Image (cartoon, rainbow, N blue to C red; front, side, top):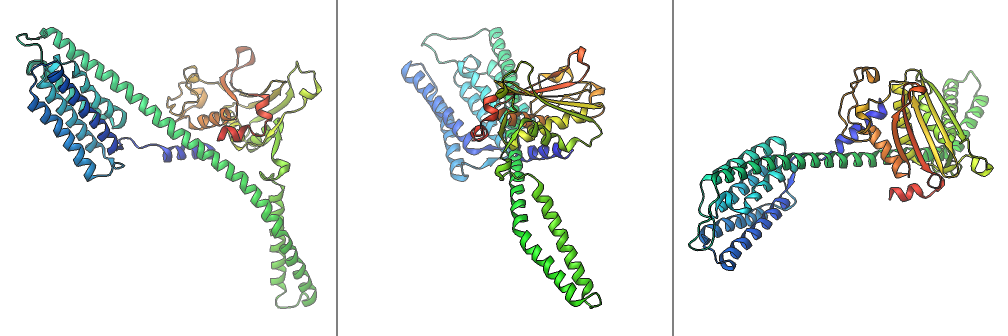
Length: 456
């Protein structure tokens, strides 16, 4: 459907491309590594006075420092590295650290755990194949350091040597930890990118809705301004017809001009009948008006759409029983409309939209008589990255749930207005079907400044 396709396209436009790492990020991380390595070597050599191959170690550290200087001079910090180049730089970091560990005790050096760092950076920023490659390089380097290395700096006349079985245990722990951290970081980074893209798409949808409401006001203003000159044209053409008569050579042209002017007036009158967002008469709307406007596009979809708006049964105060009237909010309208659209799409024959209120809350319940939400998706509804196919054939036959972006946008816009959105299925005694409940604190619904504050 059109309303479903639009957010999907916005999501694709807003997505952050995978593998685009800024040079400044790599350079800053390497400077941290250079400073840390230098401090560790100096503390061991001059603080603890352990024998350290300073020339070899300082040469390796200086090599990383010069590489950073070269990259900073050659390219701007905002430059985004391609995945192969970023992977090559991270591979260098693994090899440089491995060489430094080779001269300082190999796998027995506590700092061997830092080999995981480049793989973690890759998992967060680069495509999976590069992360796998870097992980294999790191594992091979760790395996090499298990059996071949210079002695660990230690007290004179003492040799610190770990048993082979213990070193193999460290190697195994490094491999398991590297795999777990990489998968965990990869998942978090992916969800973060998708959430950022979905929120950006939400902002674009809201801006689009607000522009559409602003266009209503422009249309009304145009109709008002153009009404007078069109009336003048119609009047002049009538006078010309009366003066020239039906036998004049230009009589047909004059009649055509008058009919087209009249048609323009009819079009403008149609535009003026549409509520304008900038019209003070339509800056607010009651609960029933909100539901009617949101449901109006789906009245002719071949499904019975029943709308009920009434105070809750326990309400006795006449002032409370009156319909709550709130600010006209494009985001709320979009959210309610999207949920009604989904209900109409999945319903077998009927959709119920029930609005109720009391002194404290305003509640909208949108339910359908379809098969309901699949239980395995209930906890994931509202996530922008929902990609699980429906296992319930009756729910959507051959269709899939896709990204769930449309519902995410609707839920986000409604929650920003102060609402709570709950999804579930009807109880057995009320028949099958899905139900979505939207609840506002009454003070949020009726406050005209709520939406402006939530959007800022």
